[in-house]
Length: 194
Image 1 (tube, helix red, strand yellow):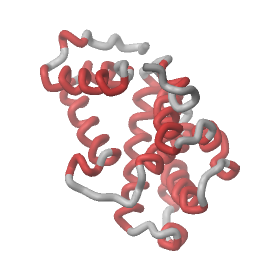
Image 2 (cartoon, helix red, strand yellow; image 1 turned 90 degrees about the vertical axis):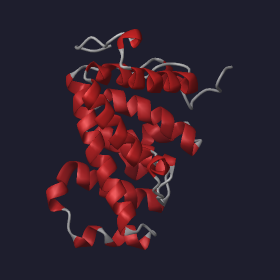
Image 3 (cartoon, helix red, strand yellow; image 1 turned 135 degrees about the vertical axis):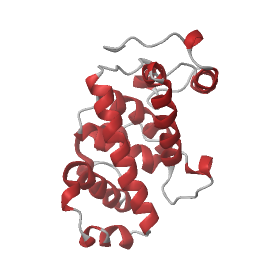
Image 4 (cartoon, rainbow, N blue to C red; image 1 turned 45 degrees about the horizontal axis):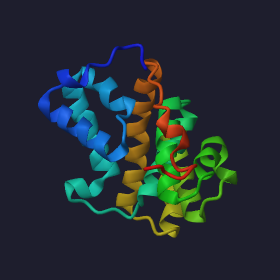
């Protein structure tokens, strides 16, 4: 799974073990990232607290105009630019499910300009890619296309923060050789079996 051995579920602190079991119950398996990062419990807690604040804003009492599909599209596209196999496969699976489009993750990972996405999503991904690859070049003019598609400044913050957070995640997954769970590859491509 990784260059760094993951701890056993039974050896995790109770709060982390409870969250991992909750994810396992919902997904039917434990995504490798949950165990890989658990080797350092304080970092695991910080990572998943920020993850949830960005990806599940209602968990911290915040609303957002970005859909779950939008968020996963940002992660999948920018993770591809960062060459992160784990995040492209894992978040691509979630993207396919949320958007109900079995081809969209592959399309945005390879070339979002030719993907079957809306003009609003294209503007969002164009901005995310600039944050990912050239954040030092972001200027006021970069906000105009997003505003034209109904994004407000808080939405734009979300796009940038998701991109930046997953830049960290991409690098941790890549350097540690974290591999995607096999289950991710078929999610959203074939009907779910009970």
